[in-house]
Amino acid sequence: MGTLQNGSGKTMLFRAICGFIRLDSGSIQIDEVMVDGNHIYNDIGLLLENPSFIEDLSGFDNLAMIASIRKIVGRNKIIEVLKKVGLYDAKDKLYKTYSLGMKQRLGLANVILEDPKILIFDEPTIALDKRGVEALIEIIKEEKAKGKTILLSSHEKEIIEDLCDEVYYMEDGRLSKK
Image 1 (spheres, rainbow, N blue to C red):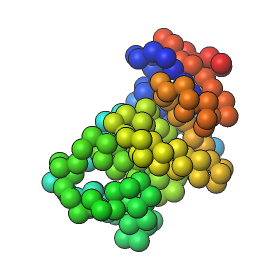
Image 2 (tube, rainbow, N blue to C red; image 1 turned 30 degrees about the vertical axis):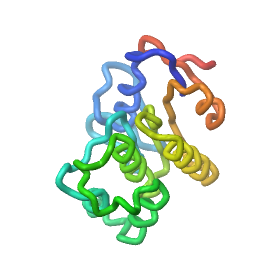
Image 3 (cartoon, rainbow, N blue to C red; image 1 turned 90 degrees about the horizontal axis):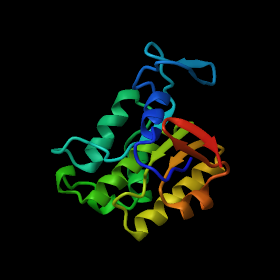
């Protein structure tokens, strides 16, 4: 998905897909699950703009806390993901000391941590340096090769053209195919 305009509704659409907001009309179904106020689809990794974590925990400890909820990944997987996003050397630093780019990388690590079926990236290149963008692109290509469903919004036309099989634009809450 691509868009050239802020405020078009893409973040709200992503939140609705994840079950974070109720729909006024229409419906969202993923596999056999109707996503609404009563049901959510649990196999989604989501990176919204400006990810937030617990300030006084390290990057590793933030991911470990998240992983403890569903108990499907352990320490080794957390280390592997931190290496993949380029945060292994900063794994023990407190989140509040992270730069914006490091915070975005931790958000990326969180998206892929539990190997979800659907990955949603909302403006994932924000605050990433060139190496961070390269890591992001590599991760998206790896996940795509595994057959994952990936929703990506970006103002960066080159990334959309390089990574997306289908491109949609969103304006005033309406999707249209390119």
